Image (cartoon, rainbow, N blue to C red; front, side):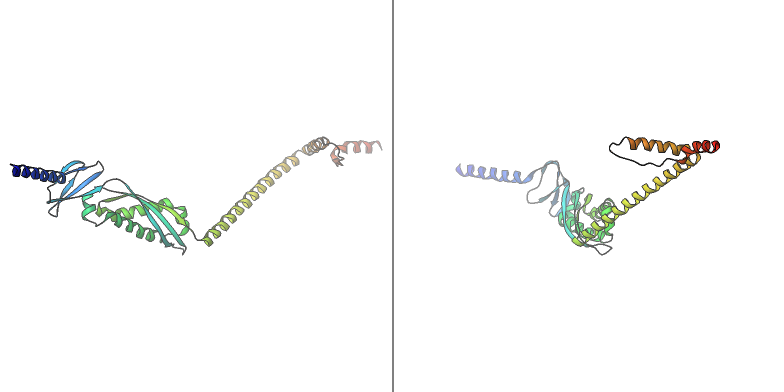
Length: 254
C-alpha cells in the first residue's frame, strides 16, 4: 500500500512538471515561434498556448517598438570635413517568424546595418546639406534601412540624425561666416534706406520746384521750431522772395 502511494505521488509530480512545461502564457505584445523537432510549425499567441514537452521549443519575440541609439560614427563628408555623427532609430518586428529564422540576432543586425548605412549616406553629402536638409537625409536613411531589413521581418519606422559634432576649427570658420553674412545684410539694409530717402528728397524737390511758396513755408516752420528752444540765438537767412515786393516798390519810388 505504501509503495502504491509513493507511485501515485511520483506520478502526480511528473504530471505537474509536464503541465508546467507544456503551458505558456504570452502577453499581448509577445508572440511565440514554435519549433517541433527543429521544424517551424507557426506563430502563436497572445494568451495561453500548449507545447509538447521535449518535442516543442518556443522562442518569444516582442512586437513593441524598439528605440536604439546608433553610436557616434566618424564620417568624412563629400567636401572633406571630418565629423562625428550619431543617430537614433525606431523599429519593430512585424513578422516574428522571419525575425527568428532569417537572421541570427535581429537587434544586433539592425544596429550594425544602421552604423554602416549612416556612414555611407552621410559620406555622400556635403556639410551644408547635412545641416540644412536633415529631414531629407533622415528619410533617405529610413528608406534604405527598411529595404534591407524587410527580409528579416523588421520594419524601420523612423531614423533621426541626433547630433553632429563639428571640429573646433570648422566651428570658428562658420562663426566668422555667419558674422560676415550679418554685416552684409546690415550694409544692404542701410543702402536701401539711403536709396529710399534720396527718392523722397527728389520727390520733395519736384514739389518745391512746382510750388516755390512751399519753400518759404518750410522756412517759416523751421523758424518756429528754432524759436521754441530757450537760451539760444539763431541767425537764420531770410529768403529773397519774402522781401522782393518791398524792393520793387522802393525802386518804383525812386
